[in-house]
Image (cartoon, rainbow, N blue to C red; front, side, top):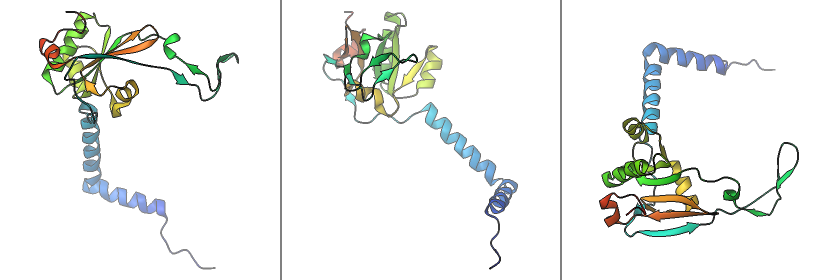
Length: 190
């Protein structure tokens, strides 16, 4: 047998941390990490691959999903069988419109606020670029951010601004063209 001549790894970690704390480096590293976190929350990375809507158009998206495995309620009753195709909108309705917009474009920002007022709050403002917390503070209502572009990809949105609504058992997305956006008029109201 050979004696262990290495220092205990945990003791070594504590020793290095103690040195960094005494020198102030640990506090500096913590402040930097906190700053990076605040920056990513205040100003998230924009959703890539979207362009500005140039021409107004309406399209429909099919919300149908294939169930990968049988879904049961707590009592064991089958809600949906594996392999079946179901429409979630048959069970849950969109309670509000979703308005996707670029917060770096003042015209789209104004349009989002006007839509919120027009629909008396029945619109969820969803940024794809910009500062959601700053707008939430300014407008005094929640502004969301489509982190990673999950929703725009799921809904097939390639251009903003776009208003998503439910129409019977399908989803409807309307994109405002430049002329309509310049008038900052709520979609379908003029």
